[in-house]
Image 1 (tube, each protein chain N blue to C red):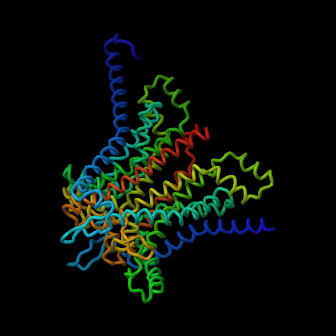
Image 2: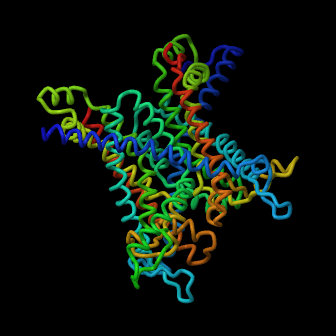
Image 3: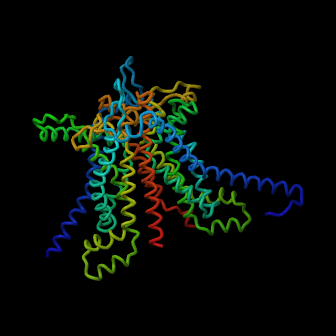
Length: 313
Length: 283
């Protein structure tokens, strides 16, 4: 193909083919770089829009102050409680969601008779497909009234507690825990299934019961996969916005289970619509903080996956 | 004995966890359909909410959703497939490939609200598209790109190498081989990716709230159909969110029921595609 031209008509045909080939390759290359360009420009834009507020308000006033009064006459832009809410809320959602998800994964990979697996697996898949606003709607209609009842019972006569009508951290955590289930289940299940069969066989041959084998041999061996599942779950929970924006209440508070709270995501969703000036810039700073969290999660994930690759090669 | 009872207890917990998902899904379905079906009617699906005519309807939102799905797929599918072809067929193994794969993973992990913010300031403000269906579609393109790239890559990997060497050996050029052999063989996988992407677009809300806006009117006929692309248009999920925040729960549940129907449909479609063993790639 790399030969020089000799004939005329024959060669012009060949030249055209070669031009088409080159064009195809160039177009595909450009397509492939699209993702790189996208991530680079998102990063740039998030920094360019999120950083100015740090200079105008001060890093310490934003990150380490807990007073969030963006529209007051003397505004204050402390997002400490918002950050804490995201951290605590995500941690709680993981604590609830991961055990249930892991046990379900064990069920699907090891325990389930084929017919039951054929019911559970599609159910999990469908749960993953339900739009987040629907989870939010259900949270408002079902969880919040229950939470309100509990709240009334728990804080009867309390003078310090601000009643929330049930829109609180706990409601949001439960919604998040449910929403991370499919991620945790799918990835844990495939990592359990990817284990070499000798592992299970030798444990059983040594006299361990099936349950002992699962929990003392297989789950420890599948640890990289399960950690990946948890990290991805963290990513989903930190980034979820619409499902919890109405469920979690509407004021910024220290993240206690029965307090109305704002997450990083819900602060943006509920205030971006009317924010202007410095307030708007601080909302972008909140976005930047969220973005930083997600990037950390991604880098962690990349590290785990790389390590997992070398371990099982 | 203690070991056996302990095992039984753990086994019980495992069953409990598994049935939690099933009960949860069944509960959601029954609840949403029970509450939603009463507000779904012919006029709910075919009219636009109007105080003047006294109608409550989501026709505009359905049309907006279709617009955004179509526009996003038109932009994202070629790019995603092209990217997968380059990664799989041209690139080999280099640091560059690792970078592209890492950024694709990263893109998949970025929360939709961040896409929303980026879309608002980049497509909306910097490129002057404003709150429009186009801004929304461009934003969602970034979001679903990894989904299409990865599904296409997997489908391409499943095509046996003998197909490639066979075609090249018979004198086909690379592009000819890709066009006539690889893409047709990988088609089921590509379509699965596209359908999954449709599911994500239909369910997406946070990335659209500040990009596509919340318009709910039907496009005007004629040129209006084209002009609609530059106008604000809220999808079904956005309307659901807005109705919910205004405490119009009847409308909210009606939309939720419609959305669940779409989700079910998409699920069945992917199942049919995945269930059909792609004969073409087995040869």
